[in-house]
Image (tube, rainbow, N blue to C red; front, side):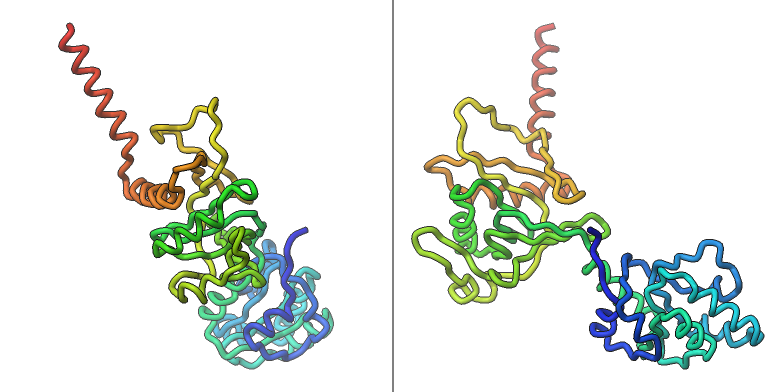
Length: 313
């Protein structure tokens, strides 16, 4: 089911004044896009995006004042007629035209008002709606901020994810979530992870129990949310499996609709997983900066082989 935000949620979040249309406060908002109906007030309704929140600012209302009484009544009725319109918001604390109030009452649409400037209102509304309407999922794993890179540690239960996260926290990195990671996908296909409210800042260590990382290590050892850049999958070492030893083939994994790099780390006694994840984070940063050690090694090896072949000839 698609996520919904009600008009009443906007009223609470932004302390909007309800001018009329209390019945419309229960209307759903299905998109984060906003619309300023300037062309519609001029009489062009061919491509009116009526499923968006409609914002009337100084420009629209000043133009509207110059219309004849008949045009004013007709334009507002056409603006409010579609059933999909969530609400109409007037910015800058401007007066609502009586034609708008009459049409809104007829079609049971909430007309709201705010003293905010139009551009500021649009920016804040868009951010709020994108956050609330973003696709979300919950993944079993641990999310840690390592050198500024969001590392999502996944793997089967009991493989050592939480212990690895504890070692990373001791080494100066920051915990975001343990056991359950709530992930939302923003409009630009960025994945943001955070912990559920109930287990925020908590870490479960088998044999010890649940610990509060912020209480033990301080506020600098935790953060509430982080962009996920790399998934580190821990799996038991399989003797017959061929693991990537150069790093030329970058694996991807899909979370919601976004593909992100996947690093598979085999686990066996003696391997320091925290250090390996630190190196994976630093290597990811270097690749983003344009340096790929594996590719450079391969190019040098190819050049060396070509030189040897030339000498043989």
